[in-house]
Image (cartoon, rainbow, N blue to C red; front, top):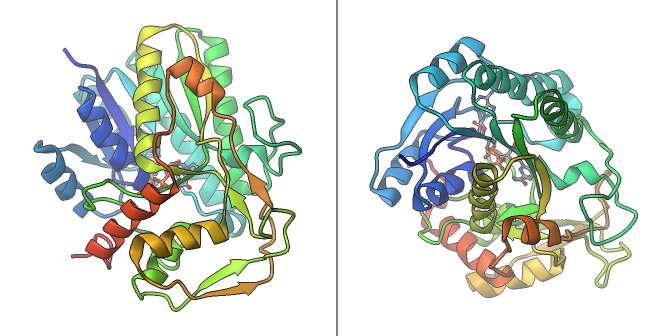
Length: 339
Ligand SMILES: NC(=O)c1ccc[n+]([C@@H]2O[C@H](COP(=O)([O-])OP(=O)(O)OC[C@H]3O[C@@H](n4cnc5c(N)ncnc54)[C@H](O)[C@@H]3O)[C@@H](O)[C@H]2O)c1
């Protein structure tokens, strides 16, 4: 029988792409989400894309009784835990909500899994755990630090999982440190649908290209980078989704726990992204340079060697493809999942 994966935060941006990748790889999926940052319409799109009716439970991962009930009713073999709040600025304003949801939710899911003897767990961590790195590219051994409550919840989440695996080596955990996920499924049917004004560069550029926002504000062009704008390691969301499939394959095939970076190993500047997006969309992207945003680092990109060696995983898609897929999603769904 094919293993079944509990996917929390299942209708969110990265999880919805991972859902499809898991199905393609032959896994069963039970999705859980409370729709705090996603839309039920995602389930219709997943059904159309996979030809299967998604198995889905609407619940909060902080609801211990609901998690106990869901895990008890489905035959789960492993969990991939995406559910979390992710807005850095909001985490500064509402730290308690972030600790309760991101740390409390993680602990609640692990407790319910443990009671049912399920001890394979993949965690959505983030490159934010590296803070402002002294050296590039960033390996997994780069010192860890948090510069805001959101980052702190990821550091604590990783620590919880290390402690758990230390206390009971039957626990196998995978911490996946994502760099900057962008792009969309090639069908254009699912993609990133931020609520309100996007916090991240590519969805912002996408909304400028489609005419929803007037111009892109570039936060600083005086960084110590080749063109003065911030440099990030953008990774196609379907490559990231494949990383989860590879991580699960590793957990099912080998004992032990691991932490890996999921990035391309290449940094792109804001101006490079703008040029690539203009080329992909055939639209002009008006830009305005404004002062730096506090807390932004100049440059950040991954050394993805460990993920390649341990999991046999490597990002396949470059910036042009990321922009083309993002644009297809944005232009086919100018109002996101609102129908
Ligand atoms: N997108 C990024 O740039 C990025 C980078 C690094 C790490 N991550 C992490 O990856 C994960 C997924 O991110 P995403 O970009 O897909 O975000 P997203 O907001 O699109 O997805 C998160 C999903 O979790 C759900 N959720 C939140 N709290 C919940 C709760 N208590 N119970 C049930 N569902 C809940 C939301 O409704 C949403 O559907 C998060 O843990 C995020 O911190 C994201």
